[in-house]
Image 1: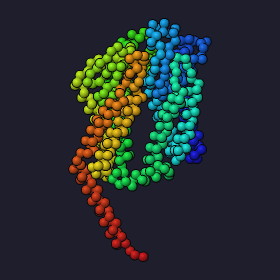
Image 2: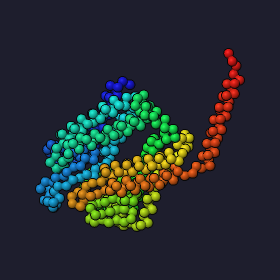
Image 3: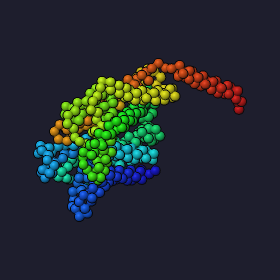
Image 4: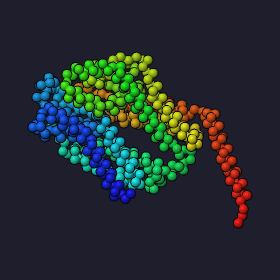
Length: 429
């Protein structure tokens, strides 16, 4: 496919990704605006708030400035009139990342991934700039530079992930193939980078699935608390619907908190608080319905849940080892040790990024500290995944593996002998 066509299609993908994200924020607020104020209300404040919330959904911190009339009507102290929100609903961030990866993969399939990545990144940056320059609200304020750079960096990361992964697997007749050839020349160490990435992806996906399972279990066990908090909020059907949508948008963020709890460090719900398997120390927390899932008490016996990340690492090690045995590569101890260390380091890096995105401020005062701590979460994931994948990758080779290898060698020797005999007996012209 011609590079210009690839670039145009990538630019169209970027425009669709930005438009869908903006509409996903704008549509519910438009419906709420119409039902609450009618069609004759002033629509001037709708876009600035929606545009700022679109930036917030891409992990851009937002400063909230409550006017005096709101403070007096709700009975809020003046000290809480200004605060920062920096724990975003990561569903929108994930959508942009995945949509970017899809666009990058399509550009790599067309053998013009570099043109596609550049066109898509430039287009999304221009649209992010347009949103940042036009969305100015007196209640919600975001930094213009952050509003431009963070969403654009998210989409660019997705583009590069999708494009380079597909180009590495299928070839691109360019720089990726040259790097691939260099790595293949490393001999027994050649599989280390790719298998480290593959194992880390397996570990992270398994950990995310485990966090989702744990979240589902807590929903079953403490669903009554959530319902009670919904009832205490005293909202009508429209308000309950908006609360539910907000909970769904925050689901990836809550899964990061759940993963941190499984890993051991847990998370905070205010300055000086802790929610972990070793113990729960909470003060007064906001009456947000989903926070009803937080366990009131913990026990040292709950520390057994740290076996879950170890099992995720073991799954990654088993899948990587199976592939290495099948391809008969990285048979030495040190290459496999390097793969185990790479899986652990990359998993810890993914955990650190997730903790950075899912932690910060959720309100004024002591609520300025919420979510998992970056360092402890990343360190715990790295150690636990290393234990799991190290057991599988560094364990002595099983007799079935050795027998299979001897059989393969014998078959290869037989094939060479057969070809040599055929060459000796072939008639000479």
